[in-house]
Image (cartoon, rainbow, N blue to C red; front, side, top):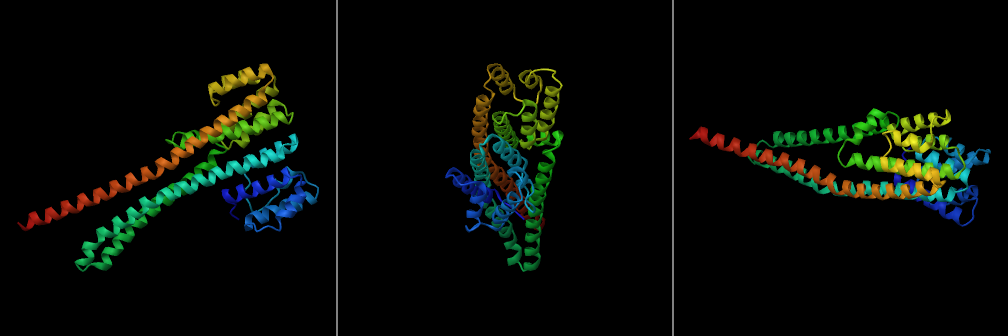
Length: 328
């Protein structure tokens, strides 16, 4: 069952509002059960309520929800919020996070409408001369074949990226590969670091050991590279090799300025405040990266389509003048 970013954002917003008003979570879910929710949201609400009635913790109840894909950032944030008593804050953060994802996808799709219209008009306009000359069936078939090629390439790119994106959550090499993609790579990096910093902060506030907190933050980041290196740092902390700040600075997976600030905050005993500052910083960076993606992706696709149409125009004129030259 598909559980979209917009559905998640709306649902988490409603849960947060009811919790803020003083409703226990189980009562909030009972209230939402009578609201006009989407099928996926209603399934989530009913499953979560049923698991809570069985005596499970909130985290266990969320993990036990079937038929819906619950991301690592949701699981880890909810677990941290439950342990720290900041569950309302967690649901608010998740609502904001998924709303940003939804708005960006919506803006990108809206920006692709014009290039798509240009492509279809261009392909069918090139078929008109042959249609007028009496080769209608062949011309329309050629136009549809051209569009089929574009659709196939777009589908291959989309599903190929989705496959690699899933792999990148656990494989550092794939994650590094996707980070090299212009614009999109920076967006992925900012989102991963925002998730990492926010989960790390809430785990620290929940009185988890730094070794446990950084391991959970790495998993929630949905970045294979951060996950691998966070696990490595966690093991080093458990073995008592060095302090957290020194390990972060010696590890190339973490930004140098972030690692340096973590080292200072560790000495000052203000890790939670420093992580909150960096969470806001990476959140702002993610918004800027989203804006660039919204602006440039449609432009890049438009330029590619325009280049194809120009090539078709030049080819048509060259063929036309070649035929005239033969006649002369």
